Length: 264
Image (tube, rainbow, N blue to C red; front, side, top):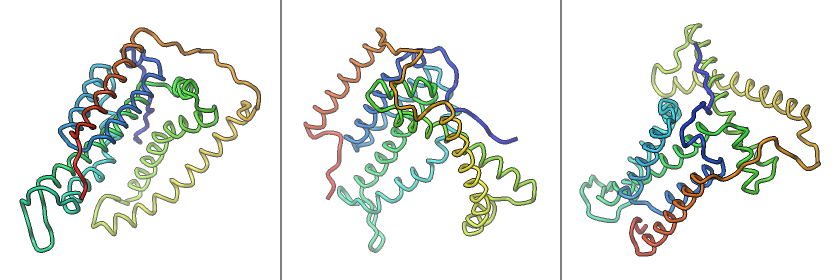
């Protein structure tokens, strides 16, 4: 059976009760933190903290893991390529022109955690925020309705495409085609067989979505109203205060010269 799942999963924990604007701002704070620091001793604790918050907030970590599987290649490339390209620090290995240093290895680990942080945070946001609330949150932060709808639809479109792709792969397997067997060239050729139907299905779904939103007056130029109005609660103000304190600490620590390697 094909794997179909929605990003949003029903829940009642504190993460689900937070205002969507608070969670969106939290993702932006995590992005800023991950960009400012490059050292793994600063980025790894953030990744652990995100997972602990998700665990305490009832986020289905199995779904997070499924979506993170596609990042394994990028993480491995970061761990392998940065030590080969980044050479400050003490040399620990040399083979001809290839040099590996301790700082290069640490930098590669830091970049791997940066990737993980900047992917797990928005995944956690979408798993605890419905598309309706996400759009309301984006609009509440000043994004125009069209932009908010397009961004929210892009996030919700990802699991749909994953489900369609899995269905196509299983259909091909029922016909005797194993896409994950053989060397890399054969795998690429087999996946090219899947790419065509997946592209056609994606275009068809996009056209159906366009017709659906237009039939509901999406292009209407008048002022839009909403049944639900967002309001910050006590927990939101506490969390927002935590964001501000964290950002101030991050800026001070970075200005003092900690948390980043100097590229040379």
